[in-house]
Image 1 (cartoon, rainbow, N blue to C red):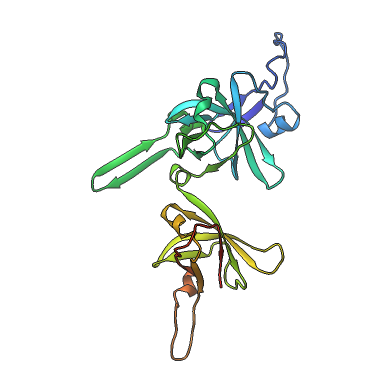
Image 2 (image 1 turned 180 degrees about the vertical axis):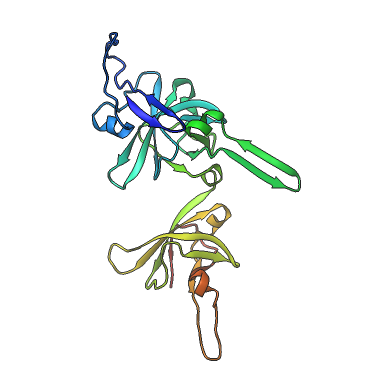
Length: 276
């Protein structure tokens, strides 16, 4: 058993092995202070039954998600979270979710998962659009998912690790990961913006040395229409402030920071781009 402190004090219990004998009257159980304490004692891991299939979802923070939080497809509950644990390789969290047998075909190899964020209100000239997550997920947290390509093949649940996006908008965006190679990348750091026609279209997510230590590699994600920039011939250059006695340029970068300017190429699509 574990003690929960959300809006009010309550107790949650887990039965790791459904094949155990039924309890006897007046049995005494230990009350753990948290789910993690119970798990460390070896009683928290979920045992799969024949009616459910387990999928794995990775995230950086649990937030409001917990054991029993529902998984939704088009606002229909199709499964629930049954376990979570730390990934010792990269300090992320791996969530295990059980999908009901009759809904397993909905989980594809390209499925995208996101957190249910409650109430969304969008106002415009045409009126007000209100979108509310299912009530259960408002109280207990929840995850929704959709398929980018509905005709994609059904996922092999034990071989796919899905990413958990912050919201639906990010989850359903088209995304391409690219690497930009620099001989010298002074002023380029994680968070450096990449602009096109004065608008930020992406940002650098991390910077590292190449394997041979002969170049600097900046990693970035291109979203939606910006994925077309991932072509041979695309050119990048660093824009930074230049202060002189008679002429100064790009003084705005003193406040906003340096940024990379991109000029799209017309060549073949590629995920590795070179800065000359």
